[in-house]
Amino acid sequence: MAMRSKAIIKWPKQVTTSLVEQLIKAERNVEKAVIVFDSASAEYANGFRHDHTTYSLIISKLLSVNQFTRAEDFIDRMTKESCKVTEDILLSICRAYGRVHKPHDVMRIFQKISEPTLKAYVTVFSILVDENQLKVAFKFYRYMRQLGFPPNLPSLNVLIKALSKNISTIDSAINIFREMPKHGCTPDTYTYGTLINGLCKLSKIKEAKELFKEMETKGCSPSVVTYTSLIHGLSQNNLDEALALFQEMEAKTITPNVYTYSSIINGLCKNGRSLEAMEILEGMIAKRHKPNMVTYSTLLHGLCKEKKIRESLEIFDRMKVQGLKPDAGLYWKMIEVFCDDGRFDKAANFLDEMVFEGIPIKRVTWGVHVKIHNTVVRGLCRGSDGNRGFQVYCRMRGKGICVDVETFEVLVGFFCEKRDLEKAIRVFDDMIVDGCFPEEDIWSDLVCRILGKQNVQEDDELMSKLVVFGNQV
Image 1 (tube, helix red, strand yellow):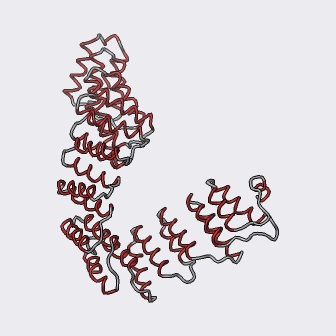
Image 2 (cartoon, rainbow, N blue to C red):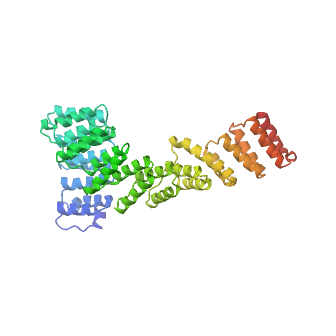
Image 3 (cartoon, rainbow, N blue to C red):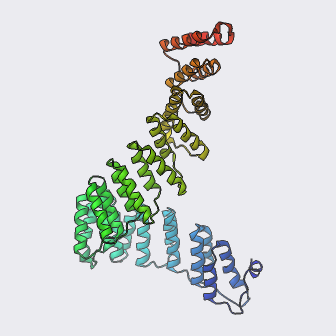
């Protein structure tokens, strides 16, 4: 590896920590950054030795691309080279494991810290709370206190966050919040924001509003996160108040983020005001805030619910232009709105697009999947586009999607009318194979329609099928 690096880097006679650090920072490719790291100490036999600064940097690079095993290998190298493994380096690995939702690895790495400081305990406590490992988190906090670490503002903020997650513990969170001054801690903007967010999520909007007013009297300016939490809570039941708060933000030059906009759009759509939500979206984009999947999905559901087909199509296309891939649920919404409008050809186009885009169908949406396909097939047949309906039907059969009795009968009826007895009998075949026998009066009607359109007595195969089907009915 050192030989390879010589072709890339021409090292000076004296290699310094600042030079190595500079070269590693400048290298965007992680593999090349590792080569730089290794070559720095391999260039001269009596030369450069890495310290915790360069080790920390290369470990950070590896963690940024989730190469956890290699990052931990560098920890082992530090130990072998008698380079002190600092608490900050181990905590960086803890945070990285927390980011990918691996709390057990967080605890494993934490145990490698020989003498953890209060900062280390609070960091791990916060990760456990963020991962909803609340039982472990509370046990961890009690252990921290037993070791003699006093409560401080960061630890109490995390504790309040943990207690604010459940209706059964929210009162405890409020009590601790009120008792903070006894521990020499003054609640800050984060404290208020955390508690307001918890109250809103638990539908305690009245208490959240009171706390919001209190924080301003205490000289704590609400952040965009605090405003967003309260706006989201208010938009569920008091939209006008949420809109007023949204306007207050702008008056105070607090810039709304994508979550703020999404909350307002969600509230408008739930109250049948999707066109106003469209205006909010336009304002959001004008201020160079990029809508995310939640924003578009919320607005699309609202527009479809109000049968705003043109606007729904516009939003659907915007999503794709922005590089966001609609999921099966959004396709279903578009297909349903076209079916409700009697535009089954457009609905079929969206079904075709789902196949082309390879949209996966989740088990929980399978019932909708079945219903939509049957509806589209029947709609196409009744709209004199039965051949396309037959194509959709064949794809259904190929994917194992259940065909219901009404769909079978509509298909057969269409092909009887068109005198396409081959397809009519093929559908009959599938119908009987599926154990989906028509009622006697429906059966009689279908046979009469076939006999009325063509002299089928001359077709022995057809007559034998009719006899067999008749006997089964």
